[in-house]
Amino acid sequence: MHEIHVGEDLRDRNREIAHENRKHLKKHGIVTLNLMSAPGAGKTSLLVNTIPRLKDRYRIGVVEGDLQTSTDAERVGSLGVDVFQIQTGGVCHLDAAMVHSALHRFELDAIDLLLIENVGNLVCPAEFDLGEDARVMLLSITEGDDKPKKYPLMFRESRLLLMNKIDLLPWVDFDTEKAKREAREINPDIEIHDISCKTGEGIDAWISWIERFCKRLEVT
Amino acid sequence: MHEIHVGEDLRDRNREIAHENRKHLKKHGIVTLNLMSAPGAGKTSLLVNTIPRLKDRYRIGVVEGDLQTSTDAERVGSLGVDVFQIQTGGVCHLDAAMVHSALHRFELDAIDLLLIENVGNLVCPAEFDLGEDARVMLLSITEGDDKPKKYPLMFRESRLLLMNKIDLLPWVDFDTEKAKREAREINPDIEIHDISCKTGEGIDAWISWIERFCKRLEVT
Image (cartoon, rainbow over all chains, first blue to last red; front, side, top):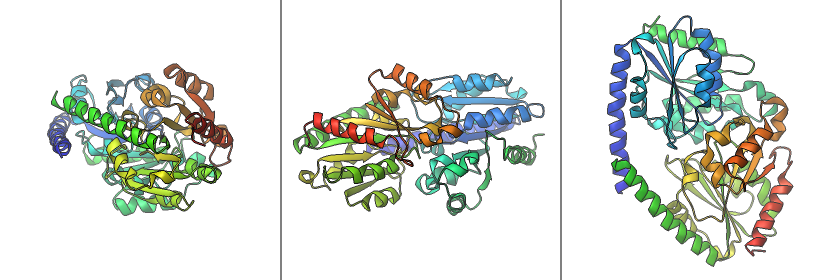
């Protein structure tokens, strides 16, 4: 049972660092969102749709988590915001220590909104608090309506669920109502919006959600 | 650096158990395939399309890996083959010890072909040898053509890549040739087939692949 204890030690250590990150981010008045999803659900596309809409209003920083490439960071960086790339070297999630290192690379007083794109994985990212204010998850409808029951932790830990790629709804077997109902059984407080990063549908609602969330945390 | 050593110990221990599994499976003349993919790429749908085509020719056993549900096992079990469900309790991959436990639940002399459906995750399953004869990965084209470069280990470790959901090709931005080229840059020996579990396209080629593979290992 040795491994399990080690796992718990790592988890405790992560919690401490996440707590430090949270204090640090708060001190600088930064609102932080942790974006999580399976691979290819559209996290980067969401950022590409979001940043131009918000960058005149908020000073935005982005942390990009990837196993070993930097293509997402380049794509987001071209939008004219500060991006720091974390290459996890094969690790399947971001942890608080990785984000802590990233924070040293930003001029924190020049940021209002920090968007963290986690590694594409529906499992482990949900287990690691990074010090964020809220977790936002994307579910691509092409992944199937059984995902809330199969990967409950991420649905439980997320404040907002964006059901992406709804433009593909006519061509895939996906029961939207079932997926929403089962997500809410796991997390009655979860807010859910349908979006399409391709057609732009639902992006307004997501932008409003960010604005309301920042307002609540008093970042304007 | 303590964690890293623990990780290596775990990896070494996994290798030993995988070696035992492999010997054991070989002794009973069983061909074993480890199916891996991101969540919702269609592993279970592939099994549902595969088993009826092969079950008169091979005696089939299935190991279903899931975090905590048994819906996939029920779906596959209804096809009239022996299924054993491994619930990992939140662990994001199968390991050799889990499969070892599962093997005790099968009557191994009554099986020719063992199909293992791994947990939906493009990262960690590729790191854990289960004792299989070959790894087969599915990439749903809805996940994007950048996946080989972003998740190279799974592409490197797989003998066969099935690009699934090609029925959706007209509606998604996916460069099939780029994805194939980049998969082959990572793994020059990888065999690639386009399939659709929905329309049945390409399933014949996959069935032939299994038959050839079994024949090579002298299971008929």
